Structures are given as C-alpha cells and as structure tokens.
Image (tube, rainbow, N blue to C red; front, side):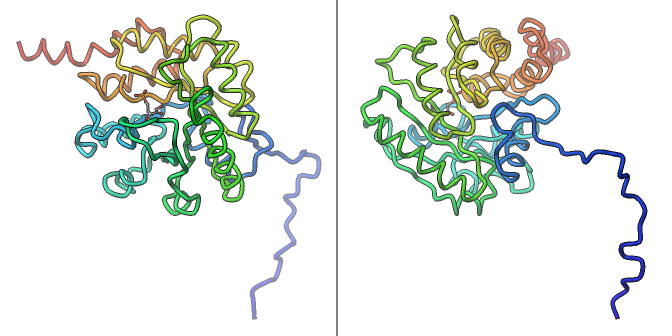
Length: 298
Ligand code: 5RP
C-alpha cells in the first residue's frame, strides 16, 4: 500500500504571507510563456539583465572568416567568458562541446553567399531542430530597406510563429545594406518593425547620435552588433555608450575574435557590460595581462 499517511497534514501554509512569484525582469518579456522567459534568462544574466553574446556565425555567408579558421582552437577557450554563443547548427554539432554549457543562439536564416544578394535569405533551420539542439534562441536576418525586405520580414514572422509554439525566443538581426545610413532614424525604423512583428529581442548597430531613442522606441531588449574590427579602446567605448544608451548587452564577433588577445578582450567587454566599467579602465584591464607577460619575458 502507498505510504500516504500524513501526506497533507502539514502546517507550513503561511496563510498570512502573500504568494510570491518571480517573473524574469527583462524589458518586454513579462507576458511571455515560462519557457521563453527561462530561455531568455539563460542568455541575459539575471543578476544584471545584460548579456555578452559571442557571435561566430559569419561562416554561414562568408566562409572561414579571419579569426574563425579553426573554431575549435580559437573560440572554444573563450566560451567560459560568454553568456551565449551565436553560431550555426553545423558548428554546434561539429565543434561546440555539449558539456560547455554555453547557451546557443542558433543562426536560423541563410542562403546567399557574399557573392550574391545577401538579403535574399530563407529560413535555414526548423524550430524542431533548434529544440533538438537545445537552442536558447534562434536568430534571423531582417533587411529593412533591402532588396528582399518583405521576404526577410516574412522569414522572421514565420520563425516567431514557430518559436511561440516551442517556447524558443527569436532574435531579429537588423542587417544594414551598404547603401543605407546607420543613423538613429533608420535604426528606430528597423528595430521597431522587428519588435512589432514579434521578435523577442533585436540586434542592431550603434549610432553616435540618438542611440538612446533607438532603445527607447523598441519595446524589447536591444543587443549591440559589433561590426567590423575597431581598435580595442574604440570597441569598448562603443559598447559602453550603447549600454549607457539602454542596450541590454552586446552580440560581438570580430571585435573579440579578431583581437590579438581575444580572451582579454571578451573579459574587458564583460566588465563594461556587466559592471558598467568605464572604457578606459576596461582597456587598462585588457592590456594588463599581455603587458605583464611581455615584462616577465624581458
Ligand atoms: C551579420 C551577423 C553576423 O554574421 C555576425 O553575428 C556579426 O558579428 P560582428 O559584426 O560583431 O562581427 O549578424 O549581421
């Protein structure tokens, strides 16, 4: 017979204490399903509400990008410093150790290579496969103002529909063609369209004037796109200004893995994002380990 004696005879009901609930406090995500909030809480550190995503998905349209020739050698040692890894399912299955425990933001759009019209993308991963990989989110490129604008927006809305079914959030990546100006007016337009049409968070570029109006006008978290490699102090300054302007973190690739010291750089970015460290101080942290090494060697 089952041992049910006293199964409900406890007294610890605390009737005077109101029930507590713990919603994940991230911009715009209060009404999302539990699975969505739980996955977002893997990407955005609950303690700071911010994230340092390491973007290494470049190979999906441009092949073995400088710094990513050997992901097993250059990137895997950095994972311990990343809050999430943005990558492709091919790289996940071939190279990312399942036991690394790093949340995956899975590139889910693709098609054209750098040799063709980049905005002509299709969805390239099913939500079922994203779930099989245990993705914490999926990412899709959206080309506002691009030749295949509507198609790319449609890719995103279909991905959002599928994500809603599985509880997997969608990151919309606002891709800006060479002919477009990355100013606040454009970025407000692109990010707002993505959020209105269901993206759970949005990746976008920085602009020096009015970035805070871009974040304010977007009802879901914005993460800063790194863009082409800059001197480290400039990249840290951009990250700092973006965070000050309301970004919920960064999704940075080349500015980390193309640095001569990628590990020092991702740590410095982490200090800016999670500790609001000033760029100059973070830069000093960045240079300290290799200057000490050089001093030791001389
Ligand atoms: C293009 C992308 C990327 O492929 C990548 O994530 C870019 O990262 P970064 O510009 O920081 O090197 O999203 O839009």
